[in-house]
Length: 391
Image 1 (cartoon, rainbow, N blue to C red):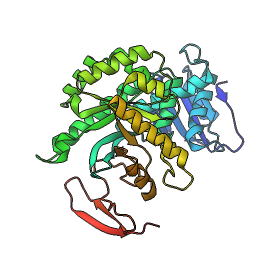
Image 2: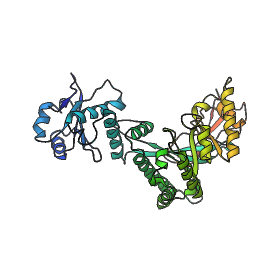
Image 3: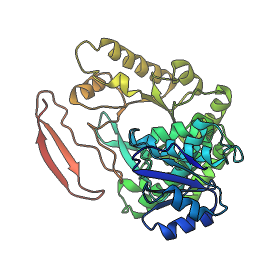
Image 4: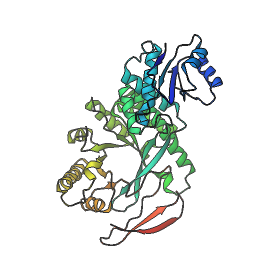
């Protein structure tokens, strides 16, 4: 029996198999079933429980190996299909043979395979990083947005899956190649003389990837040039989801990247693994202060946060770096950061992410006056202005 986790009154079932012939037979007999190829790890079939019944599957399977499990609707939507897939692989009896006999890794590898298989679904968005003196865009952070209909997940969940599955480099290669291609498209369509032709972008990488030969400074620079871009227009942003195992090696890589023209940023400074010691060792060109520090910094009683930001600003001046405040969501926080001479800011208040790089909202800086926000309708579009209450 290859049926696992049968539930009374189940609505949906998931079948997993490595046999394309079985999947083809199911597709012919169940036209409403959803079929998904999981890279080199087989196929996944989703159908109504009444359609994908034990009797039907046994008749179609012939000698094919498979596993089938009910989808548990009581689980969150982001988990139910991954869990069912893990159960289906287990009951198939093939988990050991394909090196996927540990349940957490089953789920994460399957999730990652699904993510890779949907390459054409995903897209890149751009959020402005704003010069807090001029209130103009200094650069745009590239934010990868996964679109996974069966297994909806945020990009942070996909990063976690890549780490658990021990495939962070594969993940970063996939995302970076798609991001560089999108930047190249935008550069190509930008009008001569527009900011799109000379825009700067930041791209996120995990520490493990930065230490991998795929992202060795010279190799990465060549990949950037093949995309029709210049390293001088890119900032490599080191994310903090994992501890940095070899700081001396990473420091050497950072120096090599900067010699070739790349900027280098430490993300989420003040949280997680991004400590002052790590920042001092890596000597970044940009320090991005974690949003938890920035949140409500303009409120009364936030003296500790203000002091911490002042410390980052002073520290950055000593090492020749610039400071970016992440997560700016209101006018009070913006003013508090400007008073402390923070170089750049990022957040919903300044500009949300879009599929094209947009100039930030235009904000009048005088205290006590109505806040006027100008929304850029398109890259080269007209400007429409509206008054917004400061309350």
